[in-house]
Every structure is written in C-alpha cells, then in structure tokens.
Picture 1 (cartoon, rainbow, N blue to C red):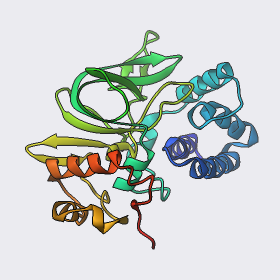
Picture 2 (tube, rainbow, N blue to C red):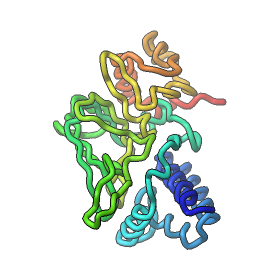
Picture 3 (cartoon, one colour):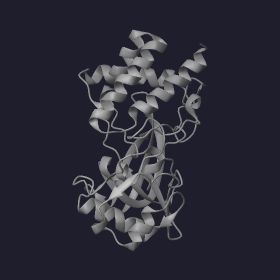
Picture 4 (cartoon, rainbow, N blue to C red):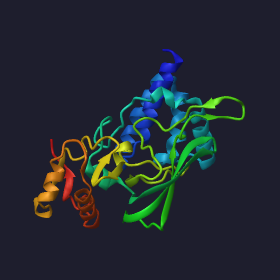
Length: 276
C-alpha cells in the first residue's frame, strides 16, 4: 500500500476516534481504531497512537509523553489526505449526529457572534482559536465572551523553514466566519491538548440567519431517529421534529433546545434515540 493511502486511512481513523461519544462507545472506537492501525502500521504504531490520543479520551500515559507523541503524529499526517470524509456519529461510525446526540453529549452549549479568529501552533499541534461574543448561555458558565481552540489551521501556513504546513481544519469539522450568529454544541475539552470540537463536528455548529437555523450539514439527520415524550412538546416542536433536512425556524429551534436542556430531557429519558 502506498504511503499516501496509508496516511489517508490513518487520518480517517484519527477523525473517527476523536469524534466524541459516550464513554463506553468511545472505548469501543478506541479498540477498533487501534486494531485497524495495528494491521496497517504494526503494533508499535498502534501503541503510539493510543498514547497520543489518551489525552483526548483518557489514559494512563504521562502528559509529557502524550503531548510529544501527539506532536509527532500531527506533524506526520497531512489533513489534505482526509478532506472529503464524512463526520462520524455517536450512534454509528459515519453519518450526522441528531439533536439527542448534540444535547446529550455536549459539555457546553452557547449562542453568540463570532468575534475573532486566529490560528497557530501549541506544542506542535495546529489550532484555530475562536472567540464568541456570548448572547445566551444554555449550558455552562460564560462571561461576555468565550474563547476556545479547535484542531487545524484556518489556512495552509508557510513555516520558517520554507515548507508549507497543510494541517487545516478537516472537511466536515466546524468552520467559522467572523460575524456569524452561531449556536455551538461543544464537547468537553481534551485533557492534554486543551482543544475542543463541536459535538457532531459540523452538525454541532448551527448558524442563525434571516430567522432560520441551519447546521453546517444542512440539518441533515438532525431530527431523525428521535423519540420524545409527547406530553412535553407543542405543535411547533412537532413541526420542528418532522424536518428531514434544511433550515428551521430559529425561535422554534432555540425554544426546543432551551426546554430540553433546562428540564434535562435527555438525562431523564424524555428525549432519546428512537428504537429501531
């Protein structure tokens, strides 16, 4: 197998692995990805990846070794090789997350205006820094502004050695434009790199524009395979949940998420994945 194809497969596996999920499912993914890498690169490389990603999903390796190994892996992997890949989900390896995933698995949920964007490197790992002017906090404590970092650069960056670093934000991950009115569902911060990603990748970034709300994935699958206690929803909620794809009314969307978060519908089993 050519090295470029190996790197492409490696990138796909990494993206799938670091996609947030419940602890048990995350562990399952870890096993699958480590086995896959073991077959592709050999046991030593699989072990190296496990150390590198321990800071993302938990592990016993030291912080120093995790950081150094992650740095080496990111430097060896070209994000351009995984461009066109779809985003993994918590209830399957590939496909868009739904509203149950977004609400149930997010550590923070916030609405605001994208105020500032920058990028750079921290311990060799490329990042984009996003600052949001907060207009509403739905989960978590925020001040007037909230800043976080996500893996990947805004655009290819020329380095001091003359080479160009191509580790931009992968396709399928949330990408930002200054001035956007967004609602962000954010997964917990990685323990080692301190990076965050939106829950459901592009699905976890919902843009509010012209009275409409639409995720980066066009709301595809956002309200599918969802079961909710019918005593809790009104006609507006039912119309929202019947949407297969495309923009929805902003106020309807915000109202539904507010109620679900405040009353802990997911935690109480009132909002859940539909049984297949």
